[in-house]
Amino acid sequence: MSETLSIIYRDEYMVAINKPGGLLVHRSEIDRHETRFAVQLLRDQIGQTVYPVHRLDKPTSGVLLFALSPDIARYLGDLFTRHALTKTYVALVRGFAPAQGIIDHPLTEELDKYTDKKARTDKPAQTAVTHFSTLAQIEFPFSIDKYPCTRYSLVQCTPHSGRKHQIRRHMKHISHPIIGDAKHGKGIHNRFFHEQFACPGLMLAATELGFTHPVSHTPVVISAPISAAFTRIVQTFSWANTLPSHWLTTQDI
Image (cartoon, rainbow, N blue to C red; front, top):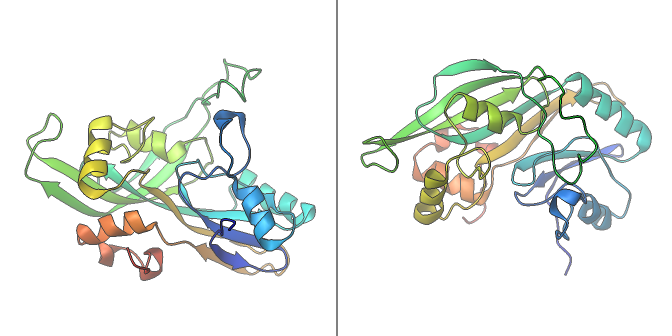
């Protein structure tokens, strides 16, 4: 039986799925042994060609939008290029993050050794801005790292630029790396969540995408619930009331 993706929005012009963590958007030299790709799975599921208009990192879950024609793909792609839309993410991070803040920290381009072999390595850092607010916090009275107590925060992030791994790199920049981030996080905390809470993946989810419809020109807001594992953490830490109910997975977890 073929894998079925969760479709969270569909009309005659576009379709959106709730991409599970661990799924590549399309075939890539970055992971040459992977056989599952959102583009092919969705195409086979709905029986027509789909055109990805943006990307989510492989370990990131959440709203992933596709156009159903080249013209709509160009329109939507332009929105992402101009940042003429709103993207909302939820992340679980190490430490007590500030109540809110703006991370204005330019990022140099992260190059992949396979796909960016011919790319310039001397490009200047690009402007990158992320707004964040802290939704909840928790402290454990034991030491995991170098501090006597261990603290974590649930944060909501809104990137105002689209740099590669922007939220992951920005949260690391302010010393609050995302739990489960193998590249930008800290292994001791990642292992703690894996062992104590059966939480093996990246705790970063694209929960909402808002933009103007390409044909009706009316506002569109597409929401995706966080994963069952992420929801279980939120409930275990008594944080469920800090998120909209439709951002939580309601099935058996």
